[in-house]
Image 1 (cartoon, rainbow, N blue to C red):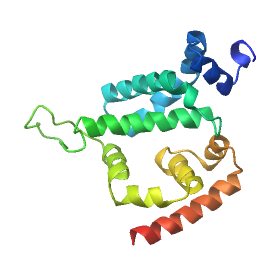
Image 2: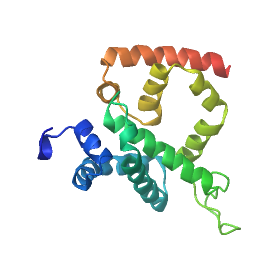
Image 3: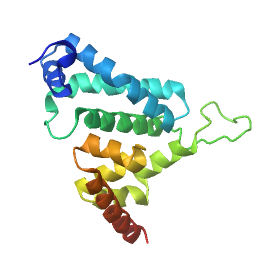
Length: 182
């Protein structure tokens, strides 16, 4: 394995699985800033986002040994992060209490962005079932481009496939989702 900045994410994750705190710090420093930025685009509550980032990297520390080596480590971390965010929103009941420009009636009510509501809907609504029925390849493209907001080029890099394949899979996914939700 390489040393310092030349180590790949996969090498770092293997070291983390063995309890290497320095490797974990390097992996955290490399990925936490973009995870934080992307989660902030999904949720308006900075405390929830900060908790989701903390939970994400705690999960990375605990489950590094379960990474199977398929796909990009960044995609694996992002999958954990978005699930942690959705879990926090669901657990806190934040998707149930929406206040738009008026004083909340109960202490639990929060201002919730439309994106927060959509994320919870994706996890629990008709769309969730339709997404789960997609093949893993199509679902990964939808997640990367639609839910994560990546460009075709970014999704291609993240998923390790050509940009044309991302476009083709997205076209197929749209057709399948239209049929499932009609």
